Length: 211
Image (cartoon, rainbow, N blue to C red; front, side, top):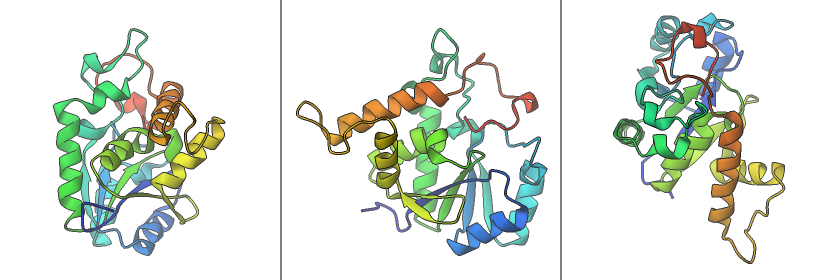
């Protein structure tokens, strides 16, 4: 059960048109979009550049907040990278800045229906599904993902898809609980999709990254 009044949603803007994206938000009664991209720009989909997006949402009566500094997948904190330059989600989740972002989401989810927005259409290919949603669920929140076709998927169902894709048992095994197996699956997936590079501040050269 959610510890907030409203389930927390996630969405990827992908290559949706402005009208299609707004339609998805309206169909799920989203009152606030929380942008969790590290760099709020898109080279190939300029309708999702920060100023354009914020104006579009304001016209539609939807609030906007940029939390890329708190919840983005390309942190400035060098301690959140391994020796190969890969972001370590577990370490990032422990930072004060990340926890401040989670607190913001939880507070606002008590007031309206929020959607965490990144660029990837697939939540299992994005830090919003592998990192942020995990932290929210561990804090007792209900999380659902708005898929590209407009359908809602619970985070539990998304985890089933991840386990199936990695050929791991949905209900655990004789040595591990379901939670243990999910933790293993998330770690494997994070190693595959987490940003790898320098730990410099994200720039416009990093457009189109959700991680």
